[in-house]
Amino acid sequence: MTYLLAIGTKKGFFLATSEDRRAWRVDGPLILGGDDSTVQSSVYAIGIDTRRSTPRLLVGADSSHFGPSVWHSDDLGANWNEPAERAPIFFPPDLDTALVRTWQFGFGPDPDIVYAGVEPHALFTSVDGGVTFELNHGLWNHPHRREWYPGYGGAAIHTILPHPDDPDSVTVAMSTGGVYQTHDAGNSWTAVNRGIMADFLADPYPEFGQCVHKVVRDSVDPAKLYAQNHGGVYRSDDEATEWTSIADGLPSDFGFAMVAHPTSGDSIMNFPVAAAAGRFPPGNRLQAQRSDDGGSTWRTFSEGLPEEPYFGIVLRDAAATDGDDDAGWYFGTRCGDVYAAVDSEPRWSPVVTHLPDVLCVRAARI
Image 1 (tube, one colour):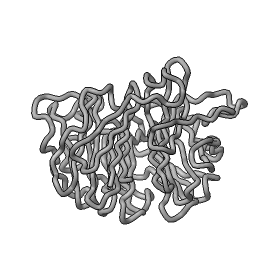
Image 2: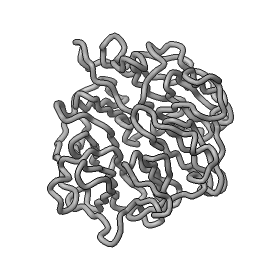
Image 3: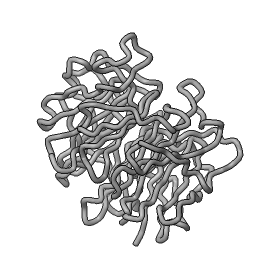
């Protein structure tokens, strides 16, 4: 059995493989397609589509010179493809806007459907497995859109959660705008932020405008969602109809990344950040916080991490699991370090250190 860990950085894409999740081979930065300059591209989005007999890798990268694009590989990164006849993702010319970057890929129950959340705030859908995408006009034409604005990271739809059993239901989250949901295959969307605070607005509990940083779905109960907000950590037991705080016990309620256990319900990992302004780990100590009761209680899960002062935080898509029952957990930091741990040996160990700024990681058992 092989475990694949894909790492997107501020400067290049790296692939790590392991048979036992203790010793890793790390390759990269990889050239995406025939363009050598892609080793310098910023990789904000990675997808590992395991619904196929051979996993398809998707990479959303942007170059400061050539701009953004999406590449895919059907041979685990040996060769990469970018459509020659058209850009994989582009806005219709009459909208007078352009793609800045892709922030996340989402995979639903239909094996040919792939979603892409992008900047500026928009959702795209692919019906050919992630080769080409089309704009979701239902969300683009939402009357709230003109009041969504960029967070510090950008005007990004960074979270896509297709319902595992209902192909017409998708939840997305954005900075800044909050959580939105469709139940009619993207024709109409509803803001679902009730209970999530926006303490930087005059109305602290508005219908929309929250700066939600990440939402994840419970692996056992699809109606249970968890949200890391710009101040506030929340759980919903009714698929985002209502949210309640689960921040008690955490060293900080600010942060970016959250990850749900791949097979065990009520089990989640959080990576706190000290404050909205400082944006360092609490106490300048790299740490993870874990809950196995849906956020009712938290415990520090940091054995093996550096004990000296550390200043690199975990960004919103820089943490992942690998889908194994004996779950592997992974995260990368802005200091370029990537760590892994498995449930049966709950101690972090470095996969690779001193990479460029880690923007995203994805993992899978293949």
